[in-house]
View (cartoon, rainbow, N blue to C red):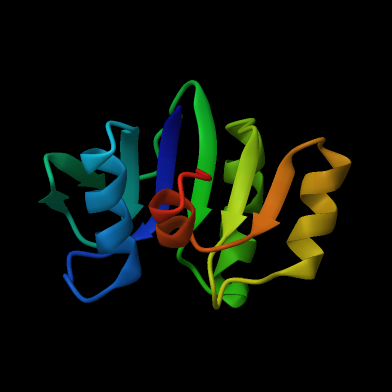
Length: 118
């Protein structure tokens, strides 16, 4: 399952950074988008929106006010699901995703990985 981490940060204390590390450590294919270039656990952070193929999961680390700029992009990737990590909850976007038959869940990627529910 390929995962896009949207809102990747090069700061080790950020949850997006930890999620990339854990996803990679658990042998998940990972791609990442953030505002600053860098590399985490061998995963390059893209600073331009790439038309990735075969994205299964988009895990969000962007607050709801910033997500608006990414709605069309995320939908265009046709992921199977979008995970809204704590602090990223967005009922308006849930509705759009439901209309496009894209699953969404409010959860923590790190907890899902730690409990083998990812």
